[in-house]
Length: 421
Image (cartoon, rainbow, N blue to C red; front, side, top):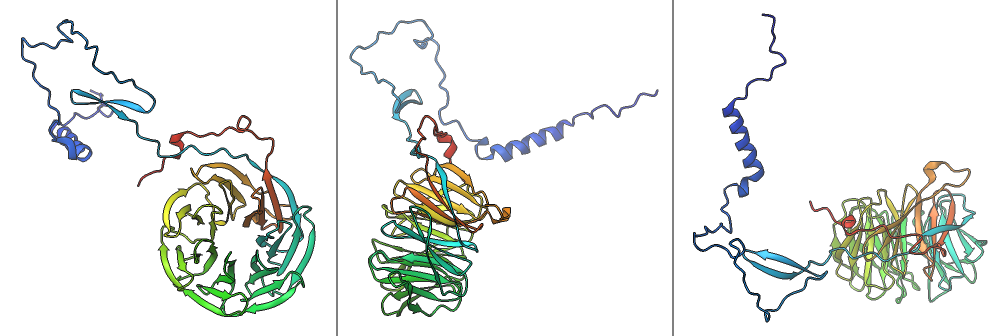
């Protein structure tokens, strides 16, 4: 009398259950639901039994060739035939082992964010520019300050040293580009033309040409000696943050906040290619020292490209930060620096991230000043210099005691499979 049916399950409606099963099968297996079997089973006639089931002994032909399976082959059955096919080659090559890098020196002297660095061709000294409007020349061996150059009235955003002349070129947010004579330690030329802050500068290795870029969405090509504005490369729709000159061809590469990378013909002053693979602003570019290729850095990915056409090669994924700086040496070690102070080390060929470092801010700085603005290898590729937001310059080197046994490569092919969307 007092029995309740609240704990009982309702009776299954057979029609609803059948309809639900049919809908689910159609959604998940629709394309192959009613597909006929490609290899229908053959009905075995009585009296013609298979030798494998009726106990009949079948003699083996001695002259029939036999195939031995090895690591590079696999047996595949197609219908009633067995075929020996080569295995599919792995899509990702095994990464090359590189020794880990460690901090060996911290250089202090600037009173503002250190924004740029350049090395002398003789590897005796390096130059940095910072937010304190100063350019400082440092002895590379000892890390001591040799010279301070003043003259810019705003943040120094780029420096580059000529390999054929005793000249240092600098650009700043004060819209100026200056040429310094390192023998007289004074400015000998000014290059006027940019309408706003100048963010990037580079020299062509073989031609007396200087290329600058800035917030006015242009890149300008200058004759180094006559100060003539040879070309104004227009086409970007936002700030041009970085510029690089390719040595083998008269070609200029620019990366912009409009999320594109443009390849320019230096002789004609026109765009050769516009690479739109990035989805966020491109803040750094780096050309490979021995191969005809380059990399570009963005908050979404680091991408490898082949020159001179700009063919996409692969992504280096995993640096979840705004990549402000990239560096690349002859040993195929790629280093990326982020605005959160993180440094990632990659193998160029495989794209494997073999080391991650987090910059430690110096005493007197706050944690939010753990940012990296510039990276550069020295001429030998054995030392790495980073310019950071805590007003210091850090020098890294490889760990000489590391071996493949003490620092093994934690890698397996499945680790590097790319997700397909």
